[in-house]
Image (tube, rainbow, N blue to C red):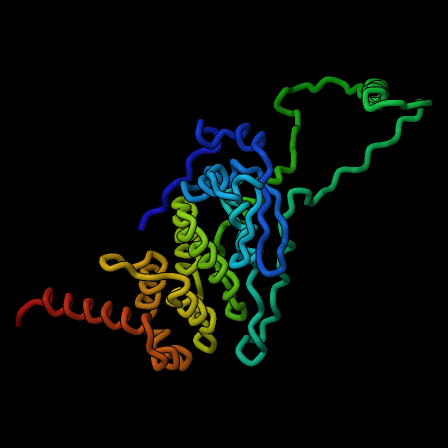
Length: 312
């Protein structure tokens, strides 16, 4: 499985000007019917299916409004992050219950990212002292420029390299929040795993290939650095249940679903730990498509070892 780069927003297809000048389309999301008003091209450019929804002949395209009750707000918000910025942040993990977590106090969660956040907020602008009357926006700008000119003199720098133009760049903070990170043994990573899996299912449903690939990429990176707590593998169990639930994913006749393949590969790679846990043994007792798939995979691995082992 390889990670496929999303086309650049600066390419002709993903013209940012084209996106922000497109008409507004309303998405009504979830059972709570939360309304999101989005630039239509930001969505239409993601796949042929969504382009048909936005620009086709159906009633939704004509009225500029669609209702998606089967999509939750969190998943849709991550999709819109991706549509505008090419990436999305995962949710924070949760603390495990006291019975299974270690005695180490939990690390406080980082505050959610916002484009307006800043560690060093700028001081408010001072009101010009000599403004007697402001009738318009242009008058206000003129008064501000005059005030700046009266107080902006600075001695020239001795060396050009001494100049400092430091700035807080919100986009950098956003993309930092998108990177997978390692976990502590007292953290419940179920929200993180399920967020990636839900977004994969959404992308699969609406044919968004680039988003499918980035969800698989992020989930793979997250699992690769995940520290298993043998006392509680509920996060892994929930990921397995979600992935192999047939309303979410299905295997084709000659193709295993990509999310199923990824989760299965992870479980097999950690089977010496996971396979001894009571929660996993109870899952096996339930049967279902996961048990069938893992048995066939283990059988194939065993057969391969027998065939390639040297003859005594």
